[in-house]
Length: 335
Image (cartoon, rainbow, N blue to C red; front, side):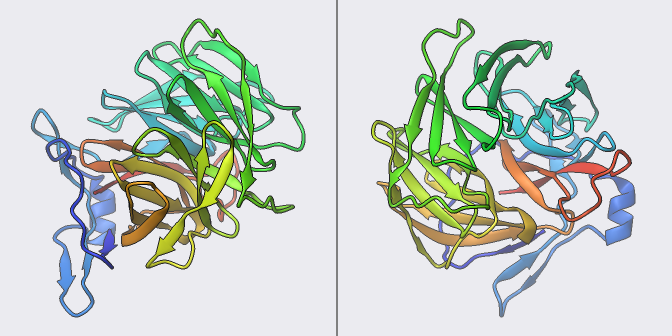
């Protein structure tokens, strides 16, 4: 992993160091081990292949997914399990972070897609389904609890999701709107469509809105616009989008998944194999670049989830052949 810091800033408090031993073959192939620091550049280089587990011992920081799985989303809750979705058929795969071992939770089906994922405290897994659809699954059984048709199937790309207040908010990469699905197993209430206005300008023939998180104060949403690489603060009541001023960075082009811890915002820039780390001001109107994270194991990572002091990401490998035989992995990097 390579980490560079452009502006020193303390990280938010977090739980004790997570750990694990990386795959031995990977460590041998890459010479993973102790890091080296370059005092002239301020860049620290290390291959993080082990992390210390909460109960002692070591946990892997790289784990396999099924061949041909086509992963994109990842979600982690309070327990050490990662849930990942498939673009191929909407399948859901669950991995035990302590061992790196996993199994199919939901087999998927023809015409189904699973991209962005978020796990709620009640065990519901919210899934962005691309073709105008959002689904909720029981994270213990994989069973489909509810299906929400947010838009017509064509001309839309329901891409990512975050949980804020009483709704799960979904982005649409091909339309200037967000969709709020009522949270909870009863499914009461109607889906809210929130048109994006203000500074937001929808661009044709590219992915616009992608990753989404709530602001630290819980009063608004932050949305990344993959092209041309911008962050927006979106008013929950009106949909008015205010472009967030970036300091220390020109853009966040190829911005995909977002993850926030306190006022630290992590922006996964997929085809750049990069995570840009920003510090948000109190009103989330300015984002100051504090560093970047890269890793030799990144192969077009799309989305991040958090457990202890690691970010876990899935490698979508968009620049590689997407066949039933293509191999895929999840990786973890320290933060």
